[in-house]
Image 1 (cartoon, helix red, strand yellow):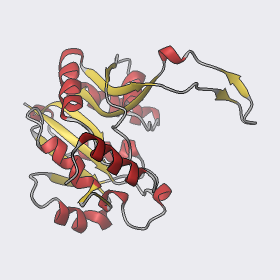
Image 2 (cartoon, one colour):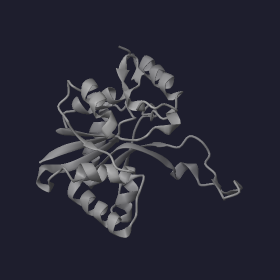
Image 3 (cartoon, one colour):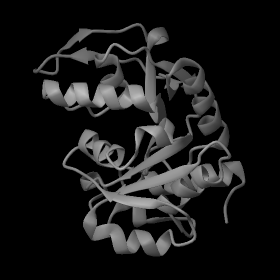
Length: 228
């Protein structure tokens, strides 16, 4: 049995306003995807890595990730479909925990990976999250505020999200039969009736989504003293 990390890198990245995959952009001399893959490659509790990418990016990904032992599969039209494509390459007997992570979160720490794997091993399902700092408002279709949730009970969920593989696969099949398509794997598990637990992580585990996120990530590396 092994723990298999699925690194999602098949998004179009339209908010980055670039034809080039945002995961091939560089932060202090290393591409986003290499930094992400390196973090999981270095973790002692991760046994295999599957990178999900767009077909047109495969050659470029293979070049920048040539030093890493991993496999590839192509993404689908949605996040759920992309994960499903990876899941279909895994035999039930081969996998204990599936570790799902956004390729666009290159600043994930070893502690976050290890702690989330440990929690999922114990509870069956766990995800990294951070306490919400801002006041959150619920609005209607006219952008009128209709509710203010209690901030103390709110968590911003990030990745990695780690699940017992056999249960996750059943939850995925269940969602497909329902015709449901979730953008969050915790929600997919909740839909199946599975409890998911939060591991508090770092605010620095940002997602590279828009152009200003690149210098922000550079600043985080500088703050950590991890610039190359």
